[in-house]
Amino acid sequence: MGKCTWIEEFRYSDKSKKDYFKFCDAVYIMTMKKPGQITNNQKTSIFNTHQLGCGHKTFWCLTKGIKDKDCNKMTTIPQNVTYNTQVIIKHALKNKYNNIVIFEDDVILTNNLWDNYEEKVEHINYFLKKMINKPLSLYLGYQPQYYYRYSKYLNKGRFFFTHCYLLNVMG
Image (tube, rainbow, N blue to C red; front, side, top):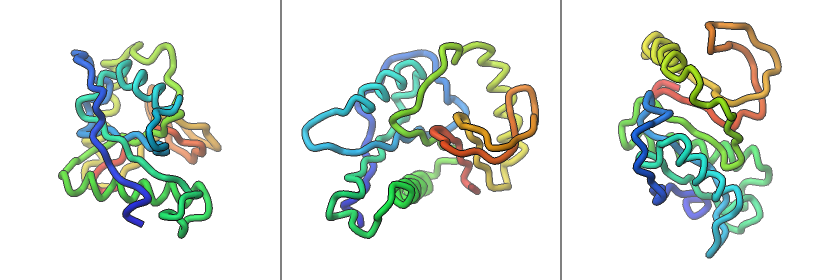
């Protein structure tokens, strides 16, 4: 299934001095590849990446999707997303990245993204250091099923429809 999903360097880097994901080594955007065109979700991803200031370390995770003959072993979208995540993790390990962020091309950014940013990063960095030798999946965008407050900016629990998450090298 190597022809089904692959990683490409993001070519829409901005020159922003801000980097929302300065606490991670790389950012991956999962998206469908349509020959010769950029989809609306990909245009939104380019815009979001400029808002986040992380284009210099971003990669596309491109997939042909479950309807393509190269991807015929996958019959559901969750299988395709799981496979794409495996491709991303292999790429991250090969490049010796410690922390990565993965988001889908339909992620929605909030208007108050940069509010209290330094304080949020301080909480995330503390949590990353605490979990350095343990598997970590930190969901930055989610719909909670149930959770409890871990700190001012972090919750622990079970989530679904996660469109943006951070993994450490152990995760």
